[in-house]
Image 1 (tube, helix red, strand yellow):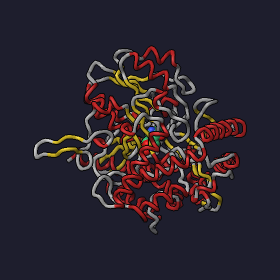
Image 2 (tube, chains in turn cyan, red; image 1 turned 30 degrees about the vertical axis):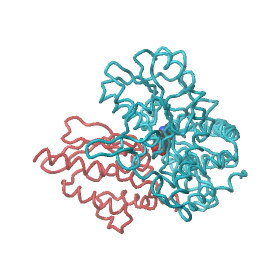
Image 3 (tube, protein in one colour; image 1 turned 180 degrees about the horizontal axis):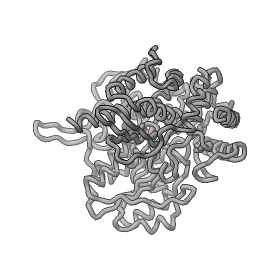
Length: 407
Length: 146
Ligand SMILES: Cc1ncc(COP(=O)(O)O)c(C=O)c1O
């Protein structure tokens, strides 16, 4: 067990009679005591609504909420907190961009470019935007290992390309996409790039200004924070032009019986009482990340993924592994011969090992891989080689078990 | 929780050698059902004559539990009336909820082997997929006739 493991109370338990090995961080990460305590302290000490009233607790809650926004800004190197919008998560962020930005900008002559490896959350909102605007969806071709060939991608990007919607890190293959180059290409043609950062912000350094991306969304719960909080980053100039999609309290400036005006950024996109405890929890998660150092996390998560990949490839005969051989972030995805991934996951669960099995919200990618489902083991800072060794043992047992019942 | 409660020999037998797997021409009723959370799929076809299921076949993709359950279900309902089949759907779902049911009511003894699934909540949906397809297929058939 590494030194971070002890920060996560949930990991100190047995599941089905064995010490828990949690290998499902891509679905949601575990939460360190520091985050749980921050949320607890918020409710015990300063719980109040924000941006209303003058009482002391209200001010403290507002400061804590807005303080969390500043932490997010610093983490992803945004220019100003006006560009940081709190919401429910990646899905909500992408929906806002697809509805608000796309509705105003897209016409029937335009194209939206995606990869076949998008999470449903970064696919369906664009399908809907295409339907309502008449714009066309087009897909980059992926290389056999799931990566993107920039030379080929370049040919797809034309003056018709209004939006590239792409994940930074694939939640199935761990592929890391070359955002900076894509941003340059699409900007040269007058389009924008909207990035699904759900699997990247938890693991690697993101500098939205350096990448020069236009929109970037992510979820708190995959980066040690609580569920129910997420972030949309957008360039101020773009957000300024966009209309809110949710209307109500908190987001208004002046309200008349027949007309109203909106608050300035970022609040015009935060209708209703915001996710105060969630934002504060996310702020604590960012403090936790900074206490370790994102570079340290990045190195660890790449190394453990590589270790897992190599161990699986060399110790488990008949295993199929999907995605790049190297440079994968945070996960390995595999199938064990004829044994269905659900059955693999059930046997591993009986050993206290939690992995995900299914289509991982990527049905088109499953078709591209020519499988109906896969198993995925995903990692974070609290995992170490001993967890992978348990996984290997568990998979050997799975093979033995099904070898036995099949006979 | 023992794996052997889940993966009983009969289940694995149906998984490896599914009965009634394939497609049918001239089917009266066909229904496709997915389990959207995990991606399991079943395509069930039935021939219904005078209120009786005279033939049933399926194809699909899924884990051992879902495919074995489909194999058993198609075996069980052949020759039953629609009403009798729907009673089995109910019996089966109560069995999956962990209720003590009279397993002798199943026309196929093998189905009893699926009782263990009730102890694995994450897998109940796998077992019920084929039965849901059956229920939906018969329901659609009725609204068509009506
Ligand atoms: C790549 C990717 N995009 C989007 C999402 C959706 O995130 P959320 O469910 O937090 O909105 C996920 C999470 O599963 C993901 O992995």
